[in-house]
Length: 185
Ligand code: PRP
Image (cartoon, rainbow, N blue to C red; front, top):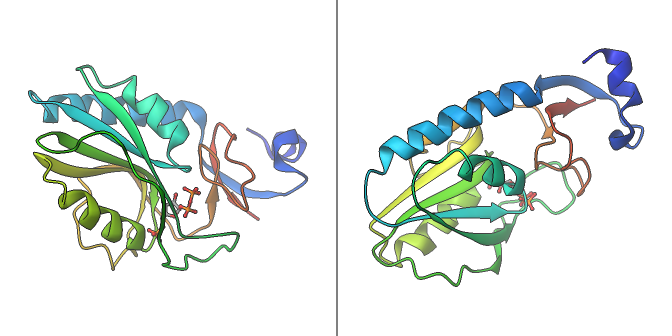
């Protein structure tokens, strides 16, 4: 997409982008690969894909359609950023999945791992419910996530320390619907 096309994108509310980091075609290619990896990693057992809202909603919906085996979907809602561009570390659980986790393979799906604090808290909570296995799939991973105590088994991309929006990621709730991932000016 050209610079002029970016400026003209009516979804941007007049904001300028620094650059498009991953366009829609590239994301689709990588999500398809992740789906194949996940399909191969779970040859048997019940698989529950747990999407962490709101950020994962687009990634999750694309990802589950690339996983070629039976699965169920549920969601978690946690919030840590508020309207700031800096992660606060205050993880708040707003919605807890109703689905029974006991004995199931749980795949927790995140849009982005930043500091890792959200996942540290959620993994503790989910582990206590006695799943058969518990793994993380994150589309984006900032490898400054030094605080993350858990391995991220499935990672879409290692990303630089830039503030990213689009494909589910927001700034003050805007830009989640961009079909690409971009850094804001
Ligand atoms: C963002 C993002 C991750 C989390 C990562 O969520 O979607 O869940 O922060 O940050 P951390 O690794 O530093 O904990 P946010 O709280 O902004 O909510 P949202 O998903 O509704 O955008």
